[in-house]
Length: 180
Image (cartoon, rainbow, N blue to C red):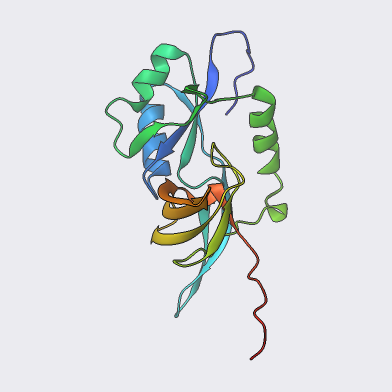
């Protein structure tokens, strides 16, 4: 949970994890004495023979780390399932204390939170919503689970493929085809 002291040189960083490794990564980092935040919400999962309420990360694939520079390096070192820190403009992305507080406050009222999974599949038309390719349109030509999809972007009459996460794109509306 969030520290009360703001001037201790610590900042909130975002650490990307392997899919479904969020709790494993959080536990390992906590054992190193480093503060983490893994906001979770309950979701009802339905199988063919039963229903069960399970706890799911609010931000799948991410753990928030409250650390100074030395702790930030220690947090990811020898941590199974930790991939890399999220970067913004060439530096580790820093989340503001007030944004962390908003996240903490939002999970206190879990009925108002819903997890929505984007249904993206091969052949879908998308628009990039985040990052340096924001605004570009393309077509999904390969889908690798919830975290990576390869998109063929067609801008300036030139095609190239990039790898994006599903959180960086939105499906575009299917255009109505004329009746034959």
